[in-house]
Image (cartoon, rainbow, N blue to C red; front, side, top):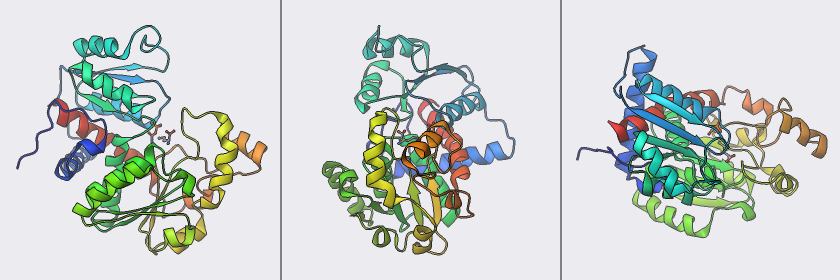
Length: 330
Ligand code: CP
Ligand code: NVA
């Protein structure tokens, strides 16, 4: 059956079938080929999109901007605090205004409810550029990167280490279940994903002949892994006061050389970025001073190793976001 995503929102992967996600990955590969061969692809000339950011960003913002421009569109960026949304204008009103002017709206911000409400009122496709609960555009880039490295997705042993109930842990569990990868959350019990989402994902995983495992033992959880993935320990929007407890909970879950050696010999390391792998950032330096640790979720050695594919992953954000924009606006 032909897949057609025209007019659809892209709010979370749970809204999409396996075939629809696979279609977006195929489309991403085609857009990557066009970009790398310098072939013009201004397929959406005359259309305009707006990027609404309530949290900071490098990759997501730049991916949407470059993708939009490559497709021939006009792109408006609204930075955190510069629109009326929330303070002087409701989400519903903002959506109805932007929907009259633009062909598509990207939103990065806080609760998933906000992006769902925007989509309800906008009348044009809305794309989730990260909420507290989900980060669905990141998923396509991650899955594309794994497929490029291994040649397939089904049966890959995927391990997420760290705060497994944040937007990345949640989204990766859903993505793996949908696409047939065996997902393990390797994290302290306090940071496991919600039972409700685990149950939903286990049902999806069963259909796709893969597994969802929760494990608090690092050596057991990372054994035979093809992919070791991590994310920062404290996410955007969380208060600074969380650092102390989070470091205590997660210091034994750092991705370092002993973790990589415990995984398969050809395992890869992934991270959505940004990452605290040294003290060359303001926060990294502050944490080092306060808590005496110079590397957090990943050691600098692993981050800089040949097994690390983080910059391929970052590049793939742009090709995959282009696929989402094109599929929903064509
Ligand atoms: N991975 C990711 O979403 O990066 P940004 O926060 O820079 O957009
Ligand atoms: N969990 C991180 C992901 C950043 C891309 C955050 O929300 O800050």
